[in-house]
Length: 291
Figure 1 (cartoon, rainbow, N blue to C red):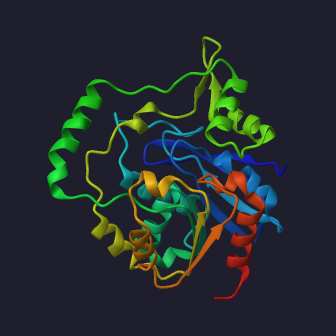
Figure 2: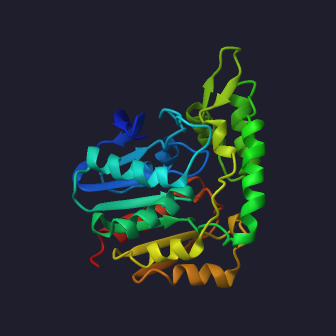
Figure 3: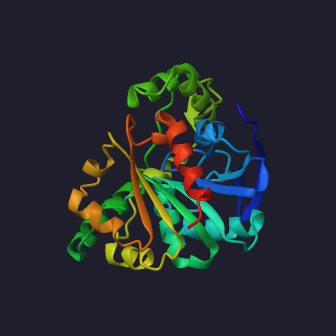
């Protein structure tokens, strides 16, 4: 297992944690994790890389070892703002090879259109976007947000790390026990009463009151100039839950001018846990093959 170090940066009023697997500086990539996940989730993928890549992976605000947000809910543009500052801190102004999973993929694809000159290559792992919305949904959305502010959500505690690993394997039967126990130590922390609590701010579960404007997102995607590798899992359930049809999914991929599309067999949404060797091979090949 490749050893990582913890780096900390002041980012927009928060103390941000970035996990760093040191490697060859000319081989550098930045990995962005998904919702209710942490940077250590990429350990298996990093271990599967053939070359000594220099890898940086932040814990998003409110996750892992990064500070929680300073308000009672989270706003998607903050991830984009945080990423812009983080790249300044540890990557400078050179174009970056960027990999994002799920939420991280959505952030990465938007950022690559907004700051197109800063992204050299982009890998999107199951970052589909959200279902399109219509203006008539706004009143109900705001009402639900207000209700949730009055009754904030909580995260279920677990008796111990083994119980958390059990839950992970129940959610993902492909996850081996060794990997589940490793992840449990990073996803969870020991609470004062001896139980194990997730390393995440429960406020992430509060609904975003702002509608998802697909037309605006697609306009950002259209500005992406970097080559894009879009990777899905053969057995993902996220498209169905997000109510994104196969036709809509294809139209979203078509928004990117320079895109290669690949599906990884034998994997669900957490494809970097299920098939890290396959995913690592795709990423390395994409990053090292001339455009």
